[in-house]
Amino acid sequence: MRRKILAANWKMNMRRDEAKSLLSSINKMKIKDGREEIIFVPSVYLEMCENALKDTNACYGVQNVYSKEKGAFTGEISALQVKDFGAKYVLVGHSERRTIFNEDGDFLNEKIKMILSAGLTPVLCVGEPLSERENKTYEAYLYKELKEAMSGVSIEDAKNIIYAYEPIWAIGTGKTAKIGEIKKTLEFLRNTLDYMYDGVKEDVHLLYGGSVNKENIDEIINTDHVDGVLVGGASLKVDDWERILNCEVK
Image (cartoon, rainbow, N blue to C red; front, side, top):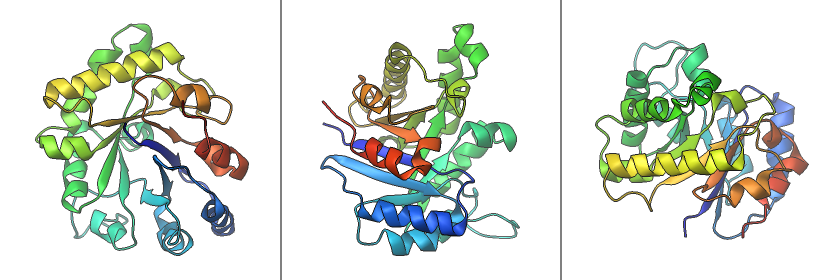
């Protein structure tokens, strides 16, 4: 049975004292066997994570790195730099990066290869806008995102990447995809990855993200093909995050 991954994306939230307080609370939280907790923090809080979470089972990562190892790239950080602070995971391809910063498939592919070469695990986000969902063209849209981002990635690396389905129309809107939509779309993604990399179907981990909260977590986490969740706003609240960590897995 694949482990359940419970991942928090803080985005550009939390002042220093707020982050310190939340990490202190996370330090005290218990997580059940067969689950993995990942906290994606703003990079300025990496050292704080290194100290606050060192005696816990919680892992942490960053929301972005650059596609090069080092050099004259003012304002950017590298995968090796975040690794030095104990980070294990990196988000790649979140719709906010794609739309606000115009990150395309080729650039994301470069990032993924750099992250892998640094010995870190990419969490690749894919997701369609509402128009693609309504026009029933979302499968072609998602396939294109996967194909571009994964070009030249080996089968062994493909097994180690975590894939997060986050429909753009459900991110930060309060709208959650229907359970049937989640199941069908993640099944499509699993089959697509198996088509691209023969035999990986049972190895890859698929997450759902999009207005996940303490009220809907139990239903979502027990949906076929869902190996975990990527949580935004609800991960910023102590009680909500603890409830999500302790969701009922059947």
